[in-house]
Amino acid sequence: MTFKTRFAPSPTGPLHLGHAYSAILAYEQAKAQGGQFLLRIEDIDQSRSRPHWEAQIYEDLEWLGLTWETPVMRQSDRTSAYRAALDKLQDLGLLYPCTCRRADIEAAASAPQEGVSQFGPDGRIYPGTCRHKKVNDAASDAVLRLNLEKALDLLENLTFSEVGPLHEGTHKINKSNMLRDVGDVILLRRGMNSSYHLSVVVDDADQGITQVTRGADLWEATQIHVVLQRLLGFSVPAYHHHDLIRDDAGKRLAKRDDAKSIATFREQGASRSDVYEMIGRKPLVP
Ligand code: GLU
Ligand code: ZN
Image 1 (cartoon, rainbow, N blue to C red):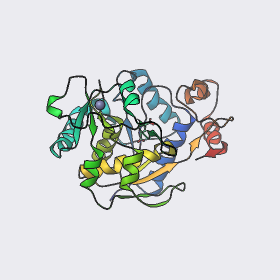
Image 2 (image 1 turned 45 degrees about the vertical axis):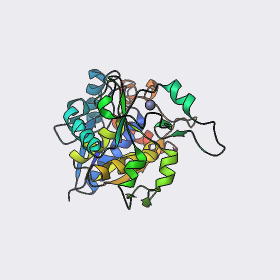
Image 3 (image 1 turned 135 degrees about the vertical axis):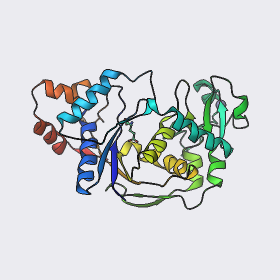
Image 4 (image 1 turned 60 degrees about the vertical axis):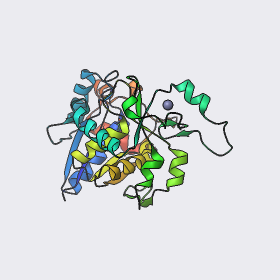
């Protein structure tokens, strides 16, 4: 099986050093394994994605000396693939429509219990208010959620392997912890053709990704992805979650951190090797 990994940026802002690090790491691993480096434009959120940011992604990656397989997958072209995955989950009886607004969810969430988080990898853990609703009766502004308890009942031996140094090893997903810490995630968002979790899983499968390389900020989301892969009959790739690049104050670099964008360094006269060096000597905190 050919080793395939990918870099999957959203075209909602400029790439910064953290993106460069992620892309370079994935690229180097693909080369070391004699495999392929793929690129995917994660533009399901059309309200925030912009063509000029997409163009700049290609420009920055080329400037960094990376090459990738073509054609590039773009999530805005993938509506029918996401629809098919949603239909499959619906046939399994695992989806329900939800019209709760943030305030409804806050009001319905039980009083905070000590030691039990109200927030999971997908934001506030959903209290299940709409779980009894049927997809066919969905209001037009409803989102679709996964009934996680029902989903987990269908699955056994939920494991995945992590090859990155931060969490290296085989990980077994604990169902009751997942119910408590994750809950019923959204798979179809308002105004979108999918959700982050659904699209990343469907796209990784369709691109034949054998190793997902990405930042440690997505470590907690991985269990959701493994559940979806198993429900949809996809193979579970290996994962490599890398440490995140921080600024001098220890703050994680965000896309809005324009001062640290690769384009800005370039405009200020930095060379390609300067940027590589910046990544090499930044303190890397998990
Ligand atoms: N699109 C995501 C981001 O920009 C990355 C998704 C992934 O690698 O799974 O952070
Ligand atoms: Zn609801």
